[in-house]
Length: 592
Image 1: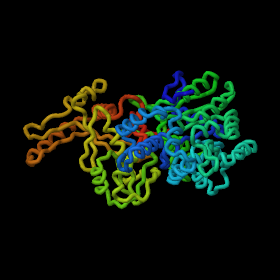
Image 2: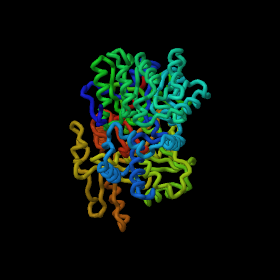
Image 3: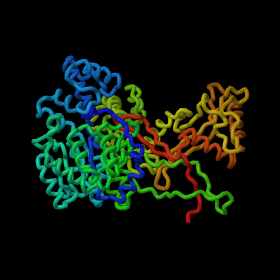
Image 4: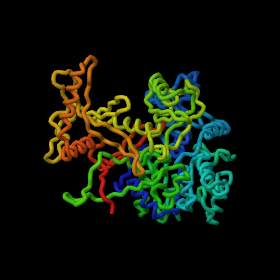
C-alpha cells in the first residue's frame, strides 16, 4: 500500500527530456497510447483532483464553523492551506496531506450522497472547453498518429475537440462504464480512434468517484486497458497516480517485461516529485527491460503543441487548430575566422518555445489603464492586456478573478495565442513580452526597469562587476555606473530589451546602451553634457567590444547553459507562462 508521498526514481537513466520523447514518438506514432489525468484539463477550466481537495476542505471547514463564502477568499493561499490542514490534522478520520486516498476520503466526507457528488462534478465540467492541447490530440488522431486515448477524467473536452477537427461526432469511439464492452469490441475490430473513460463518463449511471468505487472499478474496462498496454506504448500526462485501481492495472500490464512494447512515458511538472507509486512503477518497468521514463514537462498544451509542430504528419496542418507555423530555422556550425563570407553575430536570442495559451476574461472593463488600475487596486500579481474579445492574462486564477470580478465576469475561459497574432505589435505580443520580462525580473544579477514603452535591464550593482563583460582579452568597460562630471546626472550600463517576430519565431533583442537618470531641475547644459558623455562612451564599441557586451548581457539574462527555462510565476493553480530560450544568439550567413 502506497502512502502517496512524492519521491524521485532511483534510476538516474529513467529521466528523459521532451526532445528525446518527440524523436521516439515520431518512430512509434500510432503505437503509443495516451492516458490523460485531470492536469490535462486544467487549462480548460476544470479543477484537478488537488484543486478539488482544497475545495472540499474549505467547504467542510466553513460548514463546521458556519462561515460565509467570503470567509475564505483564496483557498490557494499557502497560509490559508496551512490553517485548514491544521484543522483537519486535529480531527480523527481524515487522511494526511498528500495521502493517496485524500481525494476520495474528502470528496465522500463533503458529499456523502452519490447524486450530490455527481451534481458537483456536473457543475465543474460544464465550464470546460477544449484547449490547444485537446485540439492537437484530435489532430494526431485524424492523421493516424494516435489511435487510443484513455482518461480518468469526466469532462467532454476530447470529444468536443475531435468533433471540431473531424467535423463530426461519429469518428471517435467513446466508451465509459455505462458501456464498457464497447472499448473491448472496438479494440478487437480495430476501429480507431478509441477513447476509454476509466472512471466513467459523468453522465453514466455507474459514476465512479470515491475510493470504494474506484477499488471495484469495472473489471471489463480494466482488462481492456491491460490488454491494450500489452500491444502498445503509453504516455501518461496530467495524472498523479493516486488511484490504486489504475496503478494496479498498469503494474499488471508490465506482464514480466512483455507489456508496453513501445515504451512507458510518465510526464510530470518540472521541479515536482512523482508519487511513490509512479516511481516504483517506472523502476520496476525498467528492471524488466521496458523502455520506461519520467519526463519533465510544463503543461499538456505545450507538450502537444511541440509534438504536432515536430511530426511531419501534422506540421503542415496546424492551421486546423489555429496553431503556429512550424519553425524554418536550421542549426549550422559557425564558419571559421577568416572565411570569405563570415558568420555575422546578431543581437537576437532565439525563443525556442513560448506560451500558446492564456486566460480570457469577458467583463465590463475599459482599456489598458483601467486594467492596470484594477490589478493595482486588487493587490494581485498578474499580467493582463485588453483585446477585442476581452482581457487576456497570466497569473493565479483567484488573483485574476479578484482583479476583474468587480467588473462583472461573464466568461472565464482560455484562449489560444496564435503565431499570426505575434507577427505584429498586437496586444497578444505585448502580453507575451510582459510575462517574459516578468520572468526575467527574477534573475539574480539584473533589475528590470520600465521607462514608458522601453524595457531596460540594469546590472545588479552588488553582484556584477566590469570583469563580467570580459571576453578573452577584450575589456569593453572599466566601470558599470557613475556620475557625469558635476551635473548630478547618474549613468548606468544597461541593455534595452525588445521582442520581435522574424523567420517564424519570436526573438529577444538585446541592445546594450547607457541609461541616464536625469533629476528634475537639471539644466539644458547639464543634459547636453550627459548626452555627449554617452556618445563618447559608446563611440569605441566596434566588433570585439560589441561582441563582448552581447555575451556579457546574454549571461546576465539567461546564464551559461545552452538553453534555459524561465517561468513567470512558478504557480500551479492558474495560467503560468513558461519560456525555453537559447543563450546563443542568432548568426546570419549565406545559406547553402
